[in-house]
Amino acid sequence: MQLLNSSSRSWGEAWQSFKHPRVISVLFLGFSAGLPILLIFSSLSIWLREAGVERSMVTFFSWAALGYSFKFVWAPLVDRVPLPWLTKSLGRRRAWLLLAQFAVMAALLFMASNDPVYGLTWVAVGAVMLGFSSATQDIVIDAYRIEAAESDLQAMMSSAYIAGYRIGMLVAGAGSLALASWFSGGDETVYNYEAWASVYRCMAVFMLVGVATTLLISEPENNQSAFSQQYGTRDYVRFLGLFVVAAGAFVAGFLLTSEITAQLKSLMVDVGVAAHVAGFFSETFRLIFSVALGGVAAWLMIHLNVAPRGMVRETYVAPFTDFFQRYGKLAIYILLLVGTYRIADIVMGAVANVFYKDMGYSKDQIAAVTKTFGLLMTIAGGFLGGLLALRYGVMKILWVGGLLAAVSNLLFSLLAQMEPETWMLAVVIAADNLSAGIASAAFIAFLSGLTNRAFTAMQYAVFSSLMTLVPKLMAGYSGTVVDAVNYPIFFVGSAILGLPVLLLIRYVQKLMEKSEECQLKTVPEEAAPD
Image 1: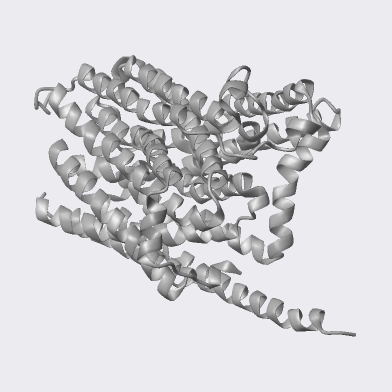
Image 2 (image 1 turned 90 degrees about the vertical axis):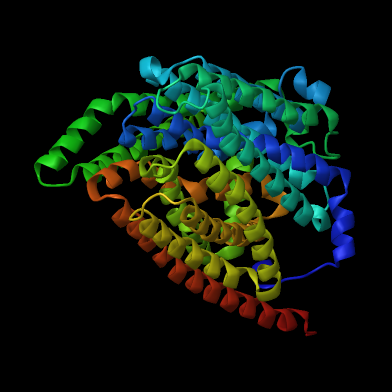
């Protein structure tokens, strides 16, 4: 297995690869992908907090980004369904990419047109639109990155993408805070809706970087799916109909269970369950029921032959079958690791900016230390993590990154008990972001090694969706937990959440090593003459 081995290239070869036109184009696409994420999370949380929205409600907005965790559901649509006129003019990948980028811009402008003081629901709708369109953009960029270059160039493509992604996050994070401060005239004592509306309009303009890149790059060669020859327009419409019906059933289930969820939560509170715990389990029930209802609707569509059975099997079933055939029982533990590895930092991250604000740090301090300086530390950690993974192996550094990510949360507990000092904030951010960079570099290498190039787009979408699903669900309640136990205890608890993951990494590593040994032993026997 590639995950247990490493290889290296010379510095000269690496530098030449970085100057490749495809690598440079992915740098700008990475910027386009990194821009929207903080406009759903941290920057939006500060806007809402300044507008007087309760802390527990602010952290619920992190659920608007659940599209990133469920993007594998509509990834096949992006991969298979052609867009009228656009696909013929631009090609399959560029057509969907352009559509997703314009959708991101539209969502940002929609959010800018609604003041959360008077239209919080519409801001939430815009945040969901932004999460969905941004996740769609990620699906297309991942597919483009894989198809646009040979395997020996993929490492540099990934590095350029990550660098661009972090720069986009810098613009959306530190940039948005600096712009908000400038538009408000530096007065942070009074909430200024127009200042934040102008910020989101500026972010929509910055998305033109991705649009220009999409129009300038060329479509990857030989990327047309066999489906384009096997299926006609009617089949694509039926396939799209399957998704629409399943999504409609999910939304209906979510809306219809609103009262039942409230009653269930009330019942649990009446029998002595803490309110935030009751809320978590009742909302989890609501989500599971809605997903199940969507699944039943999709099954009926297929069973009644309304949706093309062959297309569904080749699109949804084959990638999963391939993964489980390659890894066997080990696949369950791998998926469990993928789904929990980032739990400590995501749960903590959902409340981080609210924490900085509550501690008394200004927007300029947050922008300078947590965004600008933090970005540099994350990039440095990423390079360090890559070097360590090459030297010692992916799984060992995956464990080290998980340990550092959990331990760094303890520093926030210490910070919560101190008066606001810029130097202490810088120390904590340096430790946290270096740890996050190391962990991210190892984790991306781990996910990349799991995929089969025949199903890269779908399998990578599944892995990247799964890795944030459970953490984001839990992160939605982080504000409620803080209200119940205070910041220091919350950060200690978030660190403890990451410790079981370390045991899981060791167990998966041992199973992988055992599986590799078995494969090596069978090679001579199969090759031996009769």
